[in-house]
Image (cartoon, rainbow over all chains, first blue to last red; front, side, top):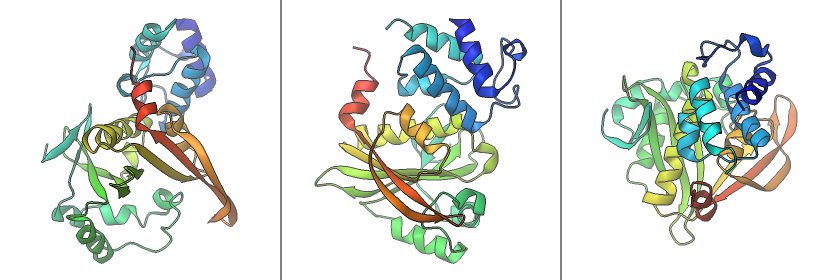
Length: 76
Length: 185
């Protein structure tokens, strides 16, 4: 699952997935701007066939929180 | 925080104050980058016209305008509103602008939308919200998709955007859809 998240991130941010560190966040990855943040969340919903709640959307601010939220929703 | 009306993770929303008129608020609505996707903002904004707007919204019951502020510093970074509120049919238009460019990031936009939806559906007990945006706006369709808005109308070639006529898109979110999306049960 984590690999799928990183693959989506690499596509959205147009960088190699090996360049995405464990604690990456906006400001750490230069390409992680406002538009791509939104594209990332939409792409994750489409990839995993899930729909995040409002509070989950607010909390998805970096890689650890994104992976945690996707993991929680996967299979629901 | 100063007089918070709704509190989020990093921002809060509060009623506008007279002091806000002396800040950057009026300048956001002259800035071509910030206003390029707003359909009716082709004229320069001034403190005087901002003051007129401020006076028109104080006490209004069909338009709720709120300032977006950073919780840590109280910096006023944008403005959001529910407008054309119908208390009979219980609907409103929803919109927001983050004027301070360094805070024009997706995470803050998501927080603002979350708070506005809570206000609209829980506190004001509205039943439907409508969002209208230019088809060329890069971020609004993504925000609408995340929050479950559905496109319900399109006016073709209505706005002159950088020399080309572009469509205006109308999207809708009902309270029922919002509750369903936020329910895990």
